[in-house]
Image 1: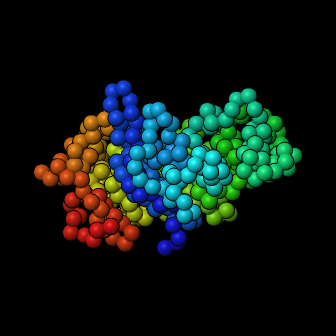
Image 2 (image 1 turned 30 degrees about the horizontal axis):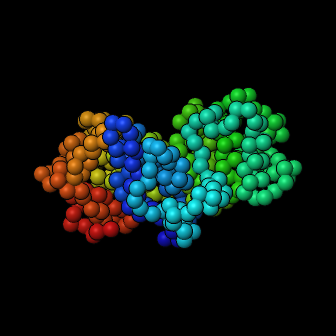
Image 3 (image 1 turned 120 degrees about the vertical axis):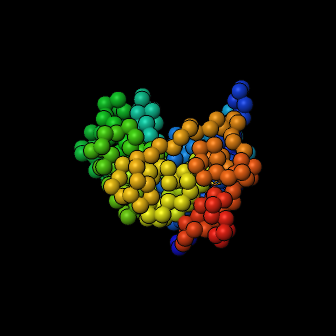
Length: 328
Ligand code: SF4
């Protein structure tokens, strides 16, 4: 296994709202290895984006706060860094692409100016050189007529062009980790395929690790080496992509896989739904947070939080059903 690039331990992020404390992340652990693409998948509200924003410390206070845990990157705990040092890492060593490119760009500056600004800030280059680098990055993402696009304002470009421009900006400082939060949600399927191809190519060319956040298991299968399945602020299953599809183990993962139409009847012989809704995280269910929706729940599931158990090589599940297996 490759070296660990980023290690999250016991991360708890809460949002202090007028109606109560939303316990958005319930102590998650995750290692991201150098050069891998790891996916986080789960329903809306399970904590995928909060995990990403916690990594780059963009959880805004109030109401959000990272209350516990550590995020180690290049030997430093990002949560203990002064803001000034964190700003040097953000956009430089760790970059993020957001799901709504139109909202991510400033509407009153050209695309080229915005990419060049990142290069000037982090690479300490002069404006002219940074502008040339910005055009090179746009060319790298396969944008036709990059000089023209660099002089365009965000509203003059299509969703696909904007998403490519955001990828160009995110990669302009050659980050070691690229976080992509639902990068294709706002795009049609043809452009989606092009953006995914581009990201695959980038990994090969730059060797960067990618944390890919999506609710789409098809994208996970196409893009990722490993995947973490999230539910209500916890990672409940972690494995390489092949194992998740061949041997889904956590009842929630089984439910997700069975909710996809397929001809394979090994794990599910009819198209299924997961009963109930994602819980209100102001009042999360005690014990295993999935127990009110779990068809295998036992008495203890509503009282104790399950640990991590090994069910295969590099395949871990947080569920009492596997308690006999090795602990993580
Ligand atoms: Fe279901 Fe219990 Fe496993 Fe939770 S710990 S997924 S409730 S069987």
